[in-house]
Image (tube, rainbow, N blue to C red; front, side):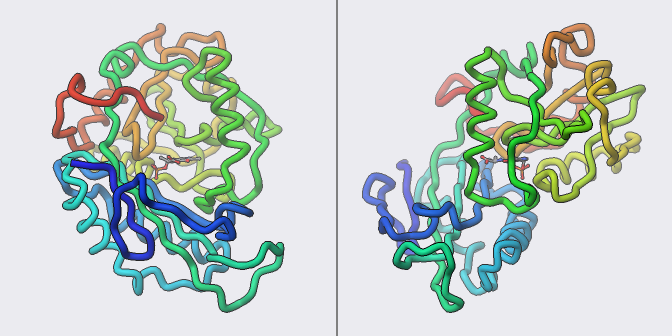
Length: 290
Ligand code: PDD
């Protein structure tokens, strides 16, 4: 078993994988990405991730038909080659290599890079106790539904939250409406209804978010996609965040306000059942991720 990479279809050890300095991903963050997990060797919600990758590629004008890249086969091949049961797959497509100039030529050849690593496990204690979140102002760009590799604002938000002792930060609009966290979508439960902000350009249309909503609707749980005020957030019965790497992670506190009496609530726990279980027990490898 080994961490591996794939550059434009060629597989190699992760340590041997290099990209040219003049790749526009390196110089301008000119690219898009996906994070996909596999459980028991099977990629989860792969079609949905590949469809979003195409939308992101279209969103930055890559002029690429992702179907021609054979991504499905490459991903399955990479999972088999790395040998892990639970895999964290990172995939990015950049506009390609050119002499550094802001404007780009129409006929560039995109570069596809993937890595396959063992998926870190969320420490069970964190799921049981819940996480602490803070609220912060939005300092990101205006095209947040594009899964761009330009994540400087997001990493600054996440890092500042961690330095202040929080797991992550919930980003608010100037009107104190909830958007998402630095790297996950946000849900609240209020009076038995599951509520999440609408999938507009101000948030990433999380694949986990979509799966959770669909699963909840199938289970006849009332769901609303609508704006959530900060006041509503702080008085919610439950708050949880979702992403491919964490599935569903409940909050016990937002700012200095305990949520649900300071303990994860029942709906978040129940919805976690809609996700595949990791093949490995938690204490055999890596711990918390975000
Ligand atoms: N992040 N919102 C943001 C800003 C994200 O970066 C992510 C995912 C999500 C959740 O999307 P999904 O459910 O499709 O994973 C929402 C990934 C995991 C990352 O950047 O590592």
